[in-house]
Image (tube, rainbow, N blue to C red; front, side):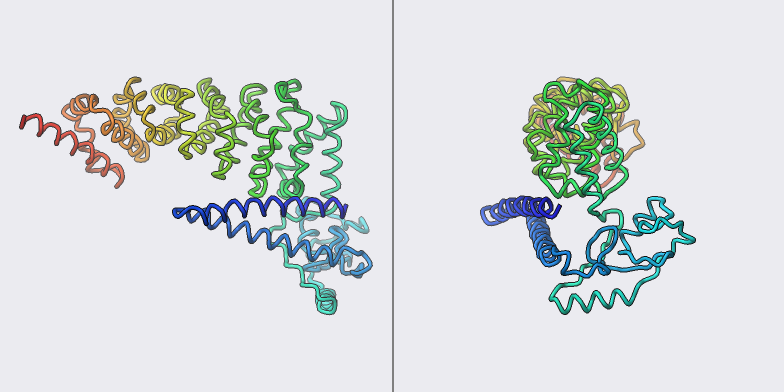
Length: 448
C-alpha cells in the first residue's frame, strides 16, 4: 500500500508542476494576464507545498516501528491529530471515529461492544505524549482535519482498489462494482477525493465502456457515467477527469446513446467539469456542443436543465461560441424560447451568443425581434428583460435593416421607452442606447 501511495503522490506532484509551469509561463509571457490566472498559480503552488509536506511526513512516519502503536489511530493507522476516548475506553483520532459514528455505527470498531453513548472525550494525556514524541523526533504535529466527511482511511483505499479490480472481471462483477461506486461517490466525499490520488483510477473506472459501444449494457453505462458526474463535483478531480483521453469522449458518446438518465448525467458532468476555463476548451474541442444542442432540441424534460447549464458554461469561452453557432444553437434555442420552454436559461445563452456576428444574422433571419420585444412587454422577470434588450442592442448596432421594425414597435407600444424608465441599470442603459440610435437615424433622415 505504501508503494501505491508513493506513486500516487509522485503522479499528483508531476501534474501540479506541469500546471504551475503553464500558469507561470502565461503570467511571464502575457502582459494582460488575468487575476484568476495569478490566483490559480498561487493555489497550485500551495497544493504542491502541502503535498511536499505530506510526503515528507509520510517518509518520516513510514516505518511502523518508528511510531509507537498507541499513537496511531486504529481506524486510519496514522499518527493521531486529535485523540479522543470512546465510551468503551479505546482511543481514536477524532475525525475518523466521528465519521464512523456519522455513518450510523453504534459499536466500538475495535471491541465491537455496543456503545452506551457516543460522547467523545479528548485524551489530553495521549495528545501531550504525541506532542512530546514529535518534538523529540523532529516531526511537525499533523494538522487537524477540517472536514470530517473528507477523511480517508487505508480501509477506504483498499475497498476502492477492490472495486476497481472487479471492473476488469466478468460482467456481473462489473455491474456490482459500478453500482457500489455510484452510491459511494454520491454519499461519501472521501471516496470522491480518493480518485485524485492516482491517475490510473479514472481509466480503470471507465475500462468496461468500449468507445463506440458504450451503451452495450445500459445499466452499467448509467452507473459508471453517474460515478464520473459524482467525481467531477470534487474540485481536485475536474482537471484529472477532463485531461484523461477516454473520459470526455465517453461522456460525449453518452450524450447521444444510453438511457435518458445517462444522457442527462453526462450533460451534468460536462457542466461540472467546465467550471475550469481550461476544461471548457478541452470539452469544446472534443465536439461536445453538437450532441448537447441535439439533446436540447429533443427537449426531454429530465435532460433540459443540465444540457442548458453545460451549453451556457461552455459558451463563456469565445472559441466555443463559434462552435455552438455553427452547430445550430441559435435556431434550436430560439424555437424553445418561442415555445416558452426554459426561457430564463436559454435567454442567458442567447445573450452570450449575440456577441458572435453570425448568431446576430441568424437571429434577424429567424424572427427573433418580435419574440424578444414580446418578452420585454409581457415578462415579469427583470433578468429576462435585461437579456432581451442586450440582444436587441447588439442586433440594432449590427443590422440597420431592423431599425424600422424596432421603431414601429416603439411607436405602437413604447416598449423600450418604458424599459428605459423602469428596468435594471443595465437594461436602462441598453434601452436608452437603442432609442438614441433610432432618434439619431430619424433626425438624419429628416435633415436629408
